[in-house]
Amino acid sequence: MTSYIYADKFFLKSGVVGPGYLEIKDGKFGKILDEVADEAQVTNYQGKWIAPGLVDTHIHGYANHDVMDNDAEGLKVMSEALLSCGVTSFLPTTLTSSRELLTKVARTIGEIYQDVKGAKIKGIYFEGPFFTEKHKGAQNPSYFFDPSLEVFNEWQEASGGIIKKIALAPEREGVSEFVKEVTSQGVVVALGHSDATLKEAQAAVEAGASVFVHAFNGMRGLHHREPGMVGAAMSLHDVYSELICDGHHVHPDSVDILVQAQGHDHIALITDCMMAGGMPDGEYMLGEFPVTVGNGTARMAEGNLAGSILKLKEGLKNVVDWGIATPEQAVMMATLIPAVSCKIDDECGVIAEGRDADFIVLNPTMELEATYLDGELRYQDGE
Image (cartoon, rainbow, N blue to C red; front, side, top):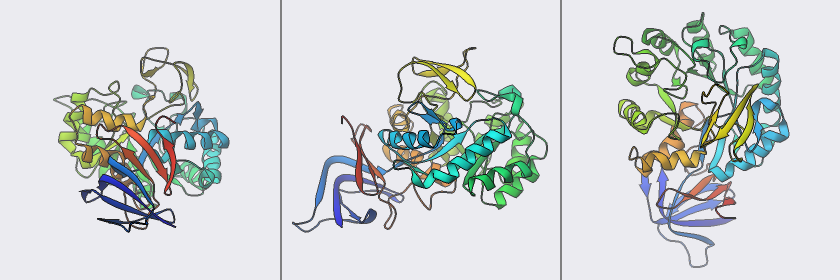
């Protein structure tokens, strides 16, 4: 079955085109045409813009469910609910925990990831447990230890081979050997929750690490005599930075500074969202820690930020409203770049002929109006 989506603009990998008609054929993207036959089935989004479905590559939970609950049904609820955020692909993200629980979580996701009916699970992101206590954030330091190939291989085997990214602190013992081996397997290594120096971060990047975890947060800051992790993110080549653009985690001016240093094409918008995303203010859990949600943030008892309640559609809009990105750049930062940074851009992040027709409808103020999955309308604002 063939149908068409009419819109003013289409955000493609090569640039913005339109107005025109986007062909949808059997749930896949077709060509973009200037005109179609009078009898063609057309959904009219005149005045609207079409972008790829958003790709959230760092998200712990949503809709009162947490990846660490190890609950298959909860993952399915999360998958469906994320469509209201414009997200059509995501990496369920773990927290530092016991080796045994992480093995169980990896196995559960590996067993059910193809069964979810909403946003598609494109792999797993292991955030830890190879971190440093000084910048532990909402990670439990009692489980921290040095990178271990034996342990990683146990998790990867349990998952069925779908761990796409793992984060570590560059100053741990054995980092270079670990990074070289897992990157040779096609797994992305990210750097974060770390007090590393520029030299230590650079050594990890030389070994193959390529992403900085929620840049500025949970890492040694920039100092004029020791550039640290933030300085590494700003100065090293061919690396990507995750950014939480909720206005709480990172000041918009700091976002702008990093974007200017790295370029829009090396910034991946993420949420780091926890289970309270999409839920009322109140008391929740992030892994093993109680968290209070209110005033747009999730905080631990001592007041530290604990993940976020950000929706990716909000981060997309924020960077435009802050004057940091054009709509085209913002879309790229929330779709293609997260996918590229995690090596899943062969499956998501672009509108391209033959790909799954996963896309969103935006209005000119960058607000989400609809989400489509495999060419089917799955979420509409206000309904």
